[in-house]
Image (cartoon, rainbow, N blue to C red; front, side, top):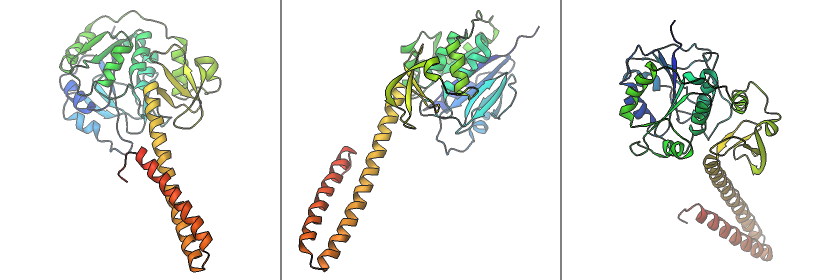
Amino acid sequence: MTRSPIIFVIGASSGGFRAVSRMMSHIPKGLNASYLIVLHSAYNTNNALSSLLAQHTDLDVCDAEHGMEIKPDTAYIAKVNHHLFVRDSKLFLSKGPRENLFRPAIDVLFRSAAVAFQNRCVGILLTGRLNDGTNGLECIQKCGGTTIIENPETAEFSSMPLYAKESMEIDYIVNIQGIPQLIKTLSARDLPPQSPVPAHIRRENEIAIKIKSQIGLQEDLGTEVPISCASCGGPLWEMKDSNPKRYRCHVGHAFSQEALLKQQESSVEEALWVSVRTLEERRNLMTSMARDYEKKGMKQLVKSYDHKIEEISEHIKSIKSVLQLNV
């Protein structure tokens, strides 16, 4: 009886295409394995990664399409600005809320593959910044799968694999050039013991891929905290049974602590820029009004507006200094 294929889910961020290309160039056909890949990319990047990766490997490479069946000896790449997830041995795409600031997010793919394939799932986390993928690796491990990270000491960008290493017990920590041989070994080895899918992982996966409603999220998966979602402004719930600590809102945005902090910083900066623009427009309007009053000989009003203009100019200068601009 032929064994079902091993599913290798691969996630990378900064430096990811180079790492994936190096790895995939040494993986032969015939391992009875399939490869699902998420690479963080800008939302307006062209979907050219599959054609580029195909130049580096003998495997079949294609963009993931909604409803596509997973076949052996094939690498599927998540489309730009679409989450990639799996269900019933098929690929699905979604433009759902970002997780850890990204769409596609590594955690979305890893979590869904953990639920769908359990002990047939192997998660591989490569080079990158921040910490997308760690929760996904934890889900894979809790569902009976195997976890691999690129050695942070030799990765082009160490943050992502290092965070995983410091947050959980990783099964294999390997330099990028050693991962193809490990893939060959795992493909030939007996599967690890099967484990039941924890209820909280199944539930969060269903929410993330929009099978179930967000209503009742706080009772099922987390505790409401006095922090607002940095993407939509709604309330956040801290996820139970999650290491590292993570947050999710009713809309579906999800963050690690580091990702939430980064998004908050971005929101603050955006708000400061809006403030600068509004104050500059207010100063321009007041300057125009002061000139009109001066022509009419209304000296007292001109003096009042000059004082207000000077005050606004100081506010603008202060905000720009926070934004570290030369003023």
